[in-house]
Image (cartoon, rainbow over all chains, first blue to last red; front, top):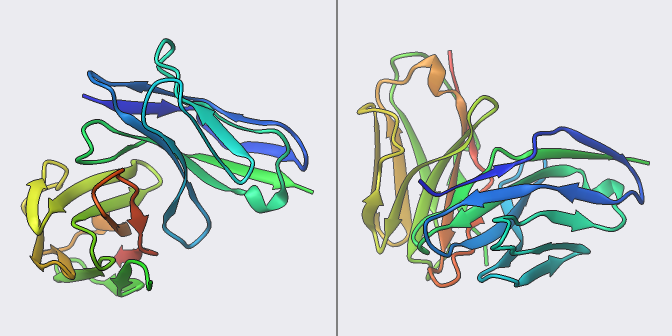
Length: 111
Length: 113
């Protein structure tokens, strides 16, 4: 079935480092793709999304491009901050009826 | 907008007891989802509703789990009888439908001893 696979963590970076979290998907159709973020003790929040091939989602300095040819939706940020420490989830919605999440990648940014 | 409201925030119970988790979605949202999060299995979709009707319950672990949505503003997830392996954080999320952005509650942390 439709699913996403994201890189395992944890990821530890120094402040101002470049971030990449890889995500690839498997789908029979043309799903919408998402990144969600979860801060400690809270539910997931939408970070960004893309609904069709070559779309770029962006928010708070994060961005991800929907790549149909490589079935990928990698999350990037040019300069991370301590406040970006959280768990990041890649997700897809295969038919706009439900949402499938990856396993999550824990990011820790050290000052 | 109060967001998705879940109760209780924490629940500790003994094996064999009935547990009921509650969720109030965002007003106007017509899709509601129940997820379970554990370290071992990550975030699992248990069931989702569209317009109060259960659409896919294939993620419900077994007959001990049941979910209802009697109206557009309330849903429950019940576990009877509960077992220690049910210990997890249970999230409710709602969506307006179009664009499929999910809005999550803060979760219920369930501990079954």
